[in-house]
Image (cartoon, rainbow, N blue to C red):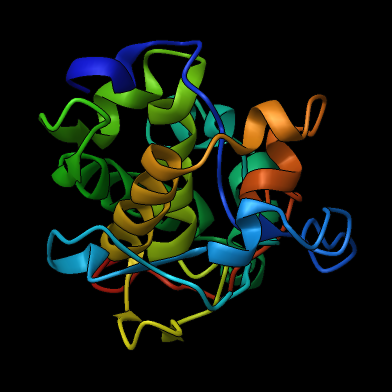
Length: 213
């Protein structure tokens, strides 16, 4: 992760909520959350659209799980998340090993997040971010993997700006641009990462194919 996103004290400023918590309803009507859509963010723009699009993030797994999912995760941990593994018996170890390799490949990606507060281009490497605990990069890496492996199950997301978010890369790019624009963390001290990013210990119906097991 380049530039300021490597800072472990980076601000969390996202328009997200779990199914049980509405951050919007808890804030004053004059809050910047009323200007929560980044128009053209996916194509590099930063015009603010004064309509609010609520993005629900729930059912995800934490960065700690994803950090180890392709290396150290054994036994029930990965089986509890990827429920299709529960239906294998004799070949479960083989299927799990294949799934871990699929996750490892998914982590070997660089994603352009756009410009930071200083106008500098910022990118994230998913694997590298997960190896550096704390801060926005660490959490966005988990958001990306939760989206790509079907834990959030929220796509497509149509924003009031007219933009459509279709995958994990577009999602974390949008959330990063919200981070650049709004200082939500200072307005909501004590709100946990689990609430911001929907890290609520969910499961997924995703199945890794092509194992040959």
